[in-house]
Structures are given as C-alpha cells and as structure tokens.
Image (cartoon, rainbow, N blue to C red):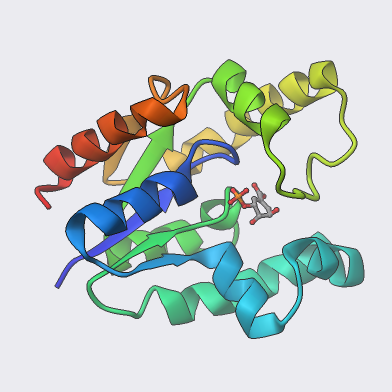
Length: 175
Ligand code: S3P
C-alpha cells in the first residue's frame, strides 16, 4: 500500500504535481482544499471569513484525518496543513511525505499570477507578498523539512516543465 503526501508552501505546485502524478501512475488524487470544500459545501475563503483561521484549522485537521486514511492515493495538503497541531507527525505516519521546495521568488511569481482566492495573501501588493512569503516560509520550513523526501521544484517555472518535476518525483518515490 502506498500513500504519497505532497506538502509545501502555497504556489509550490502541490495540486499541479499531484494531479499530473496521478495521471502518470493511475493512483487516485485528492487535494485537501478541494476535499474540504466538497465536504463542507463552502469555499476555503468562506470558512476563513465565517470561522477565522482557527476554525479553518480545526476543520482542516478533521478532513485530513479522513483523506489520509484512503489507501493507494496521492494527497496534496494546504500550505499550512503540516504546521498546525500534530499534523506533520501524523502525515509522516500515514505515508511518503514529499516537500515541494521552491524559493520565495518563484513562489511569489506563481502566486501573483494565480487566480485562486487565498485568504492569507488576499489584497497584498507584489512587494508585500514577497516579504510575507519570506517571513512565513522561514517560520514554516522547520515543519516542511521533516518530510521524508524533498523535491526542488524551482525548475518548474512554466507549465512545460511540470513533466520534469513529475519524472523527478516518480524516480524519488519509485512509482
Ligand atoms: C493555506 C494554503 C491554502 C489553503 C488556505 C491556507 C496556508 O492551500 O489551505 O488558504 O496556510 O498556506 P494551498 O497551499 O493549496 O494554496
């Protein structure tokens, strides 16, 4: 039984790589944010607005414990998932955790062109965004670094290069 769990900062490409990895291997793919939105019938941004970040983290943990029990799946987490409660220990117990590691500059470029509404960075100017990413990534890295594997995805700076990261992930994991 394999369970591949992708973690990393917002904009690292967890959903994109997870989806492509799923297509390449035939393993079903679950994105935790999508799962939360389907189960709660609410957008992540609505949950933040209604219940605050604390409320969202409690729901996220509960939903994580559902998704990470499925077998032979690829799961992508939210950027903050490993950094709350005992989630990182739990993820390492449940499967092969992979940290998709990217520099603040690459993350900023991805997030600046993203169309997804991300409550933590909504309304920030490009300059504010880069400072925020640098600071938050520095604080989160201690959790991300506890993943069993690390995959450098700075290379994945355009869609044509996603295949490179997928191939690298398959080699790393032997899948
Ligand atoms: C968050 C990342 C988001 C989502 C929520 C909070 C974070 O997921 O879970 O907006 O704390 O980094 P993505 O990393 O998929 O954008």
